[in-house]
Image (cartoon, rainbow, N blue to C red; front, side):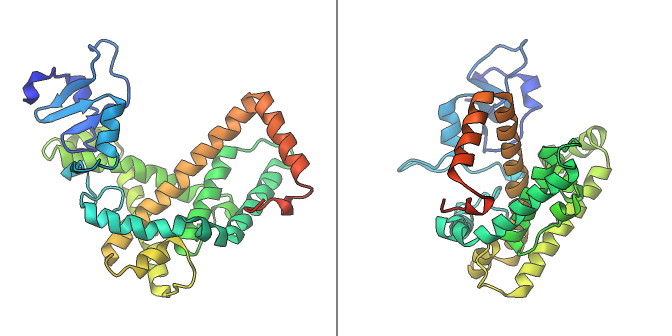
Length: 301
């Protein structure tokens, strides 16, 4: 059945195996290739490039239909973001969702305010009151990483206080290395050689450093046995169905997903506001007329 679809070997190099035999091709194909909604990217792999396929593959299955299981070689055992086991994913998702409820986030407002004040202070200090340039995107990465560390494990990475990008750089390299791991799993014979040619060996060492940091954070949080603090990890620890190995694997994802993505979104928002004067002026007016002091800006307001 698969042979009926045209095969495009350049597209096969992009295959990341995020679904079993089916994958939406998110990037545009090379201009010299014939366009199409369905192309074959391997002997048993088809890529669908339609909104409907994306929802069918990644969305929640409709009534009476089976869910698409992730590609076996894509899985990191125990990790909520890659596990192929629908039941395990449901257990972890239910436990984690409690930490993201409106009530839980309101309870953490003092933590958020603490890092917001520290971020503003660092921007003032590093910018010398407007006399020096500051990489706001970098500062936002420190900000989101520290908040993620505190809300997930009860302690920050001290990135903001030290104005340090060390931990953030490790996360970026760890994310890159996940692609190396996949290449090795997908092509057992040529994968290691391809990875060695395309990526520096130091990338693996940085990945191991990041893994060690994530494991240490998770281990310290588990050993504290403090379940009165309603952070993200406390809800996972309370659920006895989740093993320690699964806790460790999910810690890796919590740090990465909670920091890099949020910082990127905030950086983009600031960039587009600065590039568009009308919405920027409207926002500034709304904030300055609604609040008389920074202390009035709260989650409730």
